[in-house]
Amino acid sequence: EFATKAAAAGTINVIETLAPGWLDGHLEKLVKWSASQAVTLRFSACERCAYKESVTKELDAGTKQVTQTGWISSTVKTVTTIQEHYWTFAGSWNVSVFPGVDDHAHDVLLSHQGR
Image 1 (tube, rainbow, N blue to C red):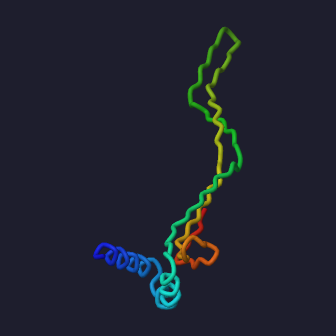
Image 2: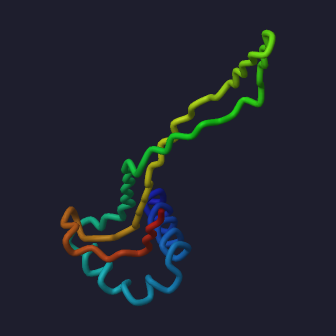
Image 3: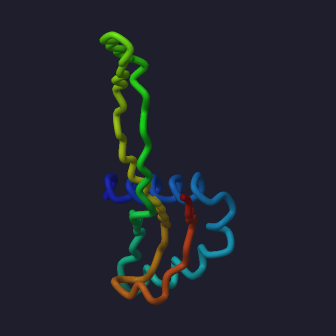
């Protein structure tokens, strides 16, 4: 019993830290849900990575060799070809709460989307 109460108090602290004031407006609903079934606190995340483009660059190595034979000269220069690939990365996450396993009736505590 002590461990269960400690876990419940810890969960309430997490909710208040993530979304201050959220619990005030939703506590009655959570108590109603918990009277007949478990209440689920879920963290969900999604990451997406998509190919954007490739860019080819030539990098001059800075070395040059000049060979001269009589009145004929030739120059050899070292060039490195680099191919760079670019990707678009996006991620999103949210923390939600819902009754039992019915995640259709969820309330989002906190969410974030970014690139």
